[in-house]
Length: 379
Image 1 (cartoon, rainbow, N blue to C red):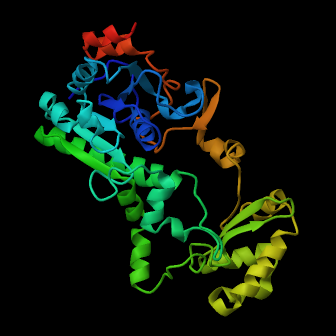
Image 2 (image 1 turned 180 degrees about the vertical axis):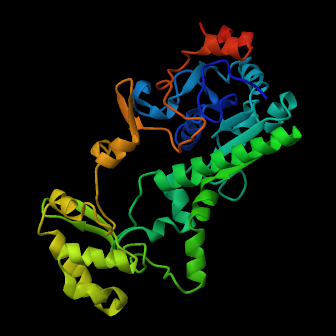
Image 3 (image 1 turned 135 degrees about the vertical axis):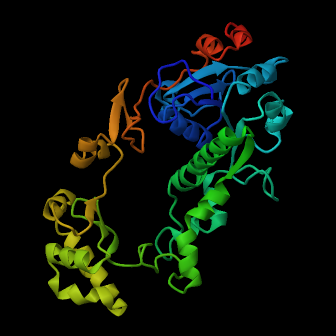
């Protein structure tokens, strides 16, 4: 087991992770590993890549250290292989075949470190007709059927930012995969390649719904089901001030509380009668339009009606519940989500802000015992 020499917190303290720089789901996965305490070293390339923002604001690079290596330079691959020889996990998000062409593919890395877990993050996966095609979150989730589930009937599917594909179906599955493979490697000494494809992970997220379709309990179209907005007591409604409330009063006891607080007791029996759902939706919508979001928030406060205000990203950190839990934290002037989940014995924290490209090369060269790495510092 390797041990990081930088101060660490969290259950992955002592785990070394090498991240080959990219954008999107790979960096987010590496951030999660870093949040959990791993010593994550990000190998940035000269001049990029990165988000179209100042690197100082790229929260996905928090809790990491950065070195700059030009993989296209004659000795670039050797520097990365030196680091891979001392790592437990490697994360890369290139198109299939690129890492091999650069000299840092799984075969080259395993020749130096047989126990290395080599995590590969792609949209289409390492094989299949589309494997070498370009793509983004929206295309990946489109093919899985999940994008087609989201939105109002008769309208184009709603785009869920890049949360469903890149991060839920991609990053989180990569993290699960590399940690499972790390457990195996530590028991056997044998590393392996983890092929995390967004199309696979996003399809997997819909496992319950595929079962419901097979059982006849879910219609394969938008806005026609219990959990996709088709049900009038599971959805969102506009308020008098143009804001929204979210309703999830599925169970009978929650529904009864919902219609009581909303002031439509005459619709108490409409929950079980789908032929009345149209009139129920109209009644609910009319009531919510009669008051502001904050007024309805106050009305439902302290109830079990399963109703909540729809907050913006900048409003969320100030909600009393999230503030009390410390769901968001401020570090270096940046308000950002705190590490999750939480651990009783090995608490996590934001230890450092976004890593600046190349800022830690000399420290990593020393800590990971890769003296040749520092030769790249002044290039």
